[in-house]
Length: 586
Ligand SMILES: NC(=O)C1=CN([C@@H]2O[C@H](COP(=O)(O)OP(=O)(O)OC[C@H]3O[C@@H](n4cnc5c(N)ncnc54)[C@H](O)[C@@H]3O)[C@@H](O)[C@H]2O)C=CC1
Ligand SMILES: CC(=O)C(=O)O
Ligand SMILES: [Mg+2]
Image (cartoon, protein in one colour):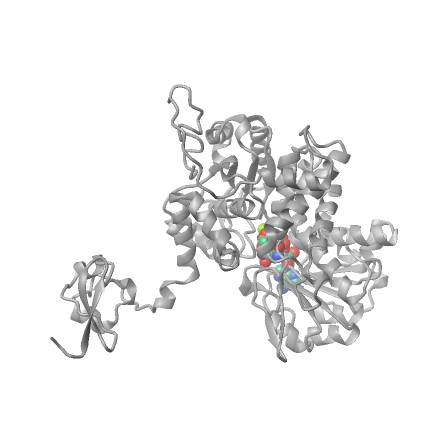
């Protein structure tokens, strides 16, 4: 035997040799190597190995490293295939490794998976409704359970997914991902949820050109036909699943707010980008005020990117300013300066503004700036708070940030555009440019910033901090509606859990590791208000705060194995027969 080799006993394949230089002896070649899990490296075989082991032609040419092979998208695919095989195991693993797993199953990695939806497609999940078959909506939607069995529907039309724009039918994956977060963060039973995509076409030219694209290969339908399509979905959903709370996600700028305004007064529904983002951002600013000593009544805000999320945040801030300062909301709106592609929003530009933006158009006589780009606005307004929901990466430049820091001691800066590559600034730069004076929160997760031997936590200001708790409160109270008053209570509950209240170097918003506890607080706040306003349809809700929280916890779904009980097929429920949601995982 070669004296340079030592024996190593492998548990499955008997004695294998490992050289001192770490090489493995292998007597196989060709397909046999690729099929052997001990030897196989897939795309990572080097050019020499491909020659030595006759692998040319059996692999695509690019050689990857081990690190490249275990990239985040591969982890995302792996986790999702685990979820479709064993849901309990999937959720247990995520909950046990929450901080590490969150960016894999949600932003930023989920954005990449959505962009590649058609090419990565393995199996369908959720309900696919399309505008050309609108007469079939009720029939198609009815395949996912009995009337009493669906508590929560997340629906998207795929037009403005995160910051990556129109993804057409791939939008189903944002509905699936947000539902996963409900289960992880607030214990909503995954068997009682339904992801839906409303396919009204796509204006994404790359998808339209792609022969593999799985959605309707045509431009987006607008106008009455689109509105009727959405309405038919809502009517069918309420008829088939009367208990279901409806969460709208990632609709486009022209539709998100209109749809919310139409249905909010009628049914229990919520737009995450408008309302969830507004709640979490207001909570972050309330926590920052604790450090800066600012009051809502006095702050000046610059909102960069006044689309669905930007105007949703502006609404929440305006209402909070109005309440604290006892001003009329239209007066409070004057403290918020919105900047979009057309520069600062002024009344003279009203023809170019959406209804949601119009409320924040400033009177031209109040505008004193020399230039109405972001730098000009920062110079003129001297804001305490700068928020980005523009999808313009790097928009918060060193010059802009330093200009802001000249006028306020602790600039509050939230670059919120997702995924990570679209953030308006990196936390590390913001801290460097302001000598760590900036109070920062970001839309996607970032590691802490280290500076002068100190470590600063960067809070994640993502609607995922609050929508799961709000939804849990809506489901358990069976609220008839989700009005602004319930969201105010949710915001206060998030702000009260801010770590920075106890430690000035800690994050402005609760960390994902405590999200289940925070969701209980949010749900309790929402439920109490729903009862007070006479909206709760559930009758046995405890009054006492501690008892209410126990009542909530008892109803949260945990990933544990439950014993299976054998029942006769004849009398079994659709769930027991495995018929519910034929393409869902349970
Ligand atoms: N952190 C969070 O919880 C959330 C973050 N977002 C992020 O916010 C971003 C925007 O999302 P939506 O509001 O849904 O999109 P949207 O399309 O409705 O709004 C984007 C707005 O930014 C404006 N804009 C684009 N380029 C600009 C530029 N160069 N200068 C100034 N304004 C510009 C657009 O005209 C539009 O009004 C996305 O990246 C999204 O991921 C959205 C919702 C929640
Ligand atoms: C977080 C989220 O909802 C978004 O980026 O669209
Ligand atoms: Mg969204």
